[in-house]
Image (tube, rainbow, N blue to C red):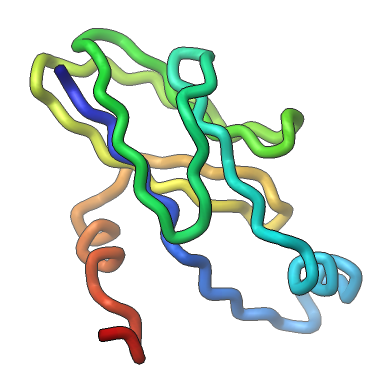
Length: 121
């Protein structure tokens, strides 16, 4: 078995008045943060929310991965070929316009995610 690990780090928002419409800011502040659906090989494999990590065990071979939000918005599709017992790690989030994003995690990304935030024990 091989593994696909997806991390959705907690987003820290910095808002500049010149870059964000007031309506978009209000929607962001007062709406719930919905989960993304993980599409593995074009089938819903689960959901991931803010500050969560999901692990999927898959067979070795070729796979596709993307994130979906509210049926219409999807991230770019990532294609990969996994060897037996290989693990791949990805980071998902949102673009400035609310579209899901997905990319392969670098070692620096993973080190930053594992560090506790300021004020956390």
